[in-house]
Structures are given as structure tokens and as C-alpha cells.
Length: 104
Image 1: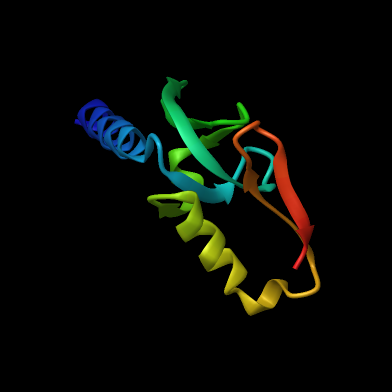
Image 2: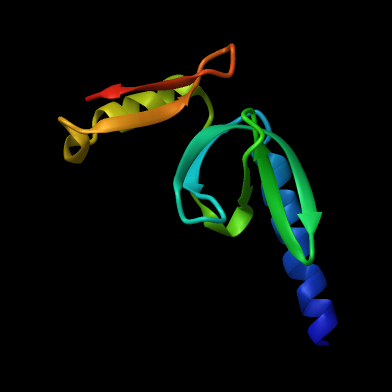
């Protein structure tokens, strides 16, 4: 029964990750660093499901905190966050895969 439950969890995470392809996400990577960017693909390794961002960083599906349909929605929400005013931020990648960063 435990194996069945684990398989169902992985299947659910694979489906969730697949639904994120082409969308923008934020969360934390395997080192605990904040990340955001567009999801390019989904993979599974050692019983864990990961999404790979456009910049090649991988994030566990379980560590994703927000999902947006497009970059404008993500950047608008980030821009509306008053807690980052005056702070240096990196909020995604441009079409040439270069980081978008600066002081808010």
C-alpha cells in the first residue's frame, strides 16, 4: 500500500509539473535560494519530481509557491509587493535568458 501511495504522489506531482510548462513560477531551489522563471520541462529523479526553468535551474514541484500564466502577471505581482521597495531583486529572465534585476 505504501508503494501505491508513493506512486500516486509522484503521478500527481508529474501532472502538476506538466501543467506548469510554459508558465512562470517562484519558490526555492535545492539550496534554499529564491527562484523564479518560466518552466521548460519536467523530470523525475530518486522519487522526486522537478521542473526545469528556462535558465536550467531545477526546482522540486513541492518547493513551488506561486504559478502565473505569463511574465507580466508575475512581474506585476512582484512589483506590487511593498516589502521589496529599496531592495535589490532578480525577478526572472528576459528572452535572451539574461537575468532581470535591479533595485525596486
